Image 1 (cartoon, rainbow, N blue to C red):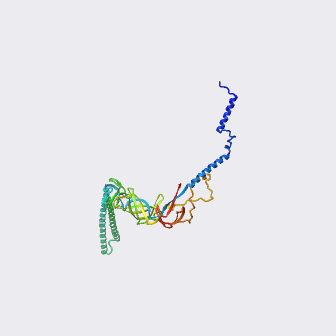
Image 2: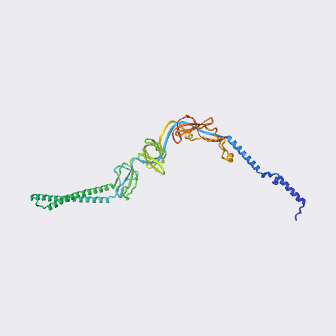
Length: 441
């Protein structure tokens, strides 16, 4: 059984607990630390924190400096170009077809073969055409025989009519009778008509025979030019039909040493290109090599693909080395304007605009958060305001004793990187502002 606590022991324990609470600062809230529940304490604490943040921000702003990036005006050559893509093709490309239907019997030309004018490229099976030609020839002979027969009949009726006339004269018009005379005259007219009809039939038969002879000749495909075979789309035994459209059997290029590049120039650039301008182009087969070209034609007809309007432009290409091939995709760069030793400036200078300065007395809309967060420093004194310029005039900026000073220039031709300065208070080595870089000391 545990020992029984006396009243003195309990009193000692309670006193010990109070001493420990006092040492640890855990007295009742309605005692010494009751102010921790007061609102004014927390408002005071927040004000101290905000003050510390503002002090840090102020010190950061004092150490932040604005540095302007500048670039010098220079003299040099300015070249304006227009880029376009297209394909290479022979100057004269001929598609060889056939006008008659039939079965291909023989093919005498293949890819890359060099052919001459009049050389046989392919032939059809001509047995059916030969039979038709033979039949038309027989019909022609038959009609010719009918002409001879009609001539004989006409001659007979003419002799009979002549005898009637003599008899009538000798008889004093009594014999033959009027009916017999009318019949003889009718027979004579009929004989003349039969002869004319027979002769017309001969002409018709002759034309039919000639047509069959032409069809028979067209069964043999000849080369119309001196050139190279680019494509061959037939094989022996293949049937070709030319009912509505002549099938293409071969594609020939007349001279691959002279080619043309057809590119599509955007409608925004077509006003800059013209016949006679020089250019260069590259192809994927020779990425490190450029080839010269010259514009020979800018076509008026437009082409629209996916809503983009372009104009076909043709450039002449010298392919003496035969390294270029028809159908290659090429990217052309056409020189539309060129000036030497001109005053020019980087286009970054034209794009620069000075930062907006805050208006004194204007309250910030950032609230407490805006006051707590650091902002980019002011760029110094507010730059002088000049009259707005348009068209060829442009406002640029230079540094004068740490301040921005506006300068108005007149622009000339431009490319993707530099612009010509026609007039303005600038000269070689004048440094103009291109941008801002912010650093901390």
